[in-house]
Image 1 (cartoon, rainbow, N blue to C red):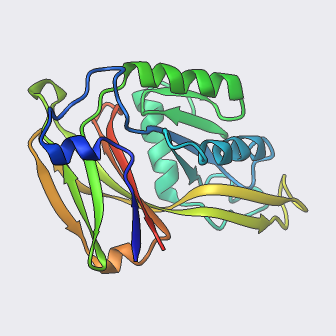
Image 2 (image 1 turned 90 degrees about the vertical axis):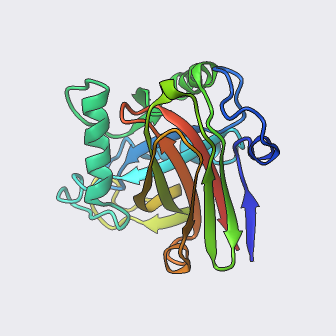
Length: 239
């Protein structure tokens, strides 16, 4: 049986109230993406900070394990080329000269060194003050998941609706590389992500099939503009 934990204006969506909350007046989670690797000795403090954020209901933290550390002594079992590609896309959007770990991207608009706690917290609060929210809902439907997105004003344009599967918590014994001999605890590890649809500003609904849902421990949906800004997010826990 699935236990829903929707984190964005679900009651507003169901009640048919205005679709988009004003900037700074949102209840959706702020999305924090950590680009990390088990091969990076600077990353464990950022991983631990992400674990703290995972206990907050107002933040959706996601750990993307990049693969460019894999050739340097330890192959991260959670790494993927897709995570590296996403980080490089952010580098272009944020006009960054390079990619690095640990990097946190906050709500798709700001990046900060992921182990700098104060700067991360400040970036989250700044993102909350500037955020808008398009209501997003995901609910169990049989063995699948129904995803609904409300409509938005024309000025929002279009956005990609992402389905993200992740593991809640994992502990790994590191056998080599910069962290060789250490035991690393990590949270909200992204295991797969894929576009569900291109949202055009009008109400949208789709069903994620059971075969897709079964691949992941937990699920999130994120609505993101081409320029990187997050418009909506929700999670669904499975148990």
